[in-house]
Amino acid sequence: MENAIVTGLLAYGMSGKLFHAPFLSTNPQFKFKAIVERHEKKAAERYPDLISYDHTFELLNDKEIELVVINTPSYTHYQLAKEAMEAGKHVLLEKPAAATSEEVKRLFDISRETGKKLMIYQNRRYDSEFQSVKEVIESGRLGELVEVHFRYDRYRIGIGPKVFKESSGFPANGLMYDLGPHMLDQAFVLFGKPLSYDKVTSTHRPGSQVPDYFHFRLSYPNGLNVFLTGSLLVAERQASSVVHGTIGSYIKGRTDVQETQLIDGMLPTDPAYGIEAPGSEGKLVIMGADNEKETLMEPPVRANYNDIFDAVYHTVRQNALFPVSEEQIAWQIEMLEA
Image (cartoon, rainbow, N blue to C red; front, side):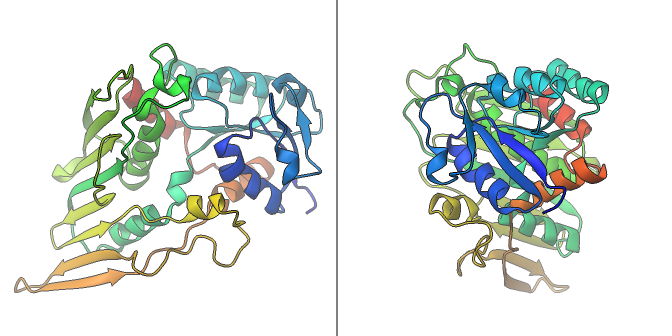
């Protein structure tokens, strides 16, 4: 494609293999030129024309590269985003954007000073279950909302091998900084900034240095309460989204298939990509005037992480507003570090 954005990727771990490279290589709005592989050189097996640099500074010194995708460990995000923008590159930065509100403010200041776009990669906005929840809420079929629950349930009692996530010696560590940005972002998309919030965290796994449980309660106008919960010790997963309103409820499981499809090698260009399997419908219950209950199984929305890459293109090439705003990221980091 003419005017494609020449792009470099800073790592080829899980996120690089699944959430970035397949899209950069198939979306014609991007020219996927280079990657940083500090140890094993694996990207060439799938992308033979890709340049593999040994060090970040080599990629940042590549004058043809316009956009850098920063998908390195979270404690490196601030410094690498700063270096990339100061090197004249636009930045797509994975969550969490930084460890502190001060760092986030400085990054957006650097973006303005350099004239380079800073875009935060919140891909879970484009999961099918969230898109389905959003569609039902916006339809008004639940009436005035009363209570909303979003959950991430996992069971991992052992300490993971990624030290930067499991050690108290690294900033932006633990489950809350890993999954909290997704959940807070989804709440902001639907409801904006809360009037107030409170948060609890706790640690239960033997030998853990970081919290493995977190819970936010966000308070909104008209008595709406939004609850965000993440845990590494749930043996039986609950529904990931439960929404109650004055005339109905909606329940949806964590059924997005994109990550699984990408693990299995499916490309985003496949006609089956993003389509949930039968049986994963959301359950919509509506109460009638005489308290008759009507239950509907709502087909899921088809989802595609390409939407966020399309937004990157429009932001860089057409100066469009990126859907993840600076204000939303500031709220997010403030609540994570509180």
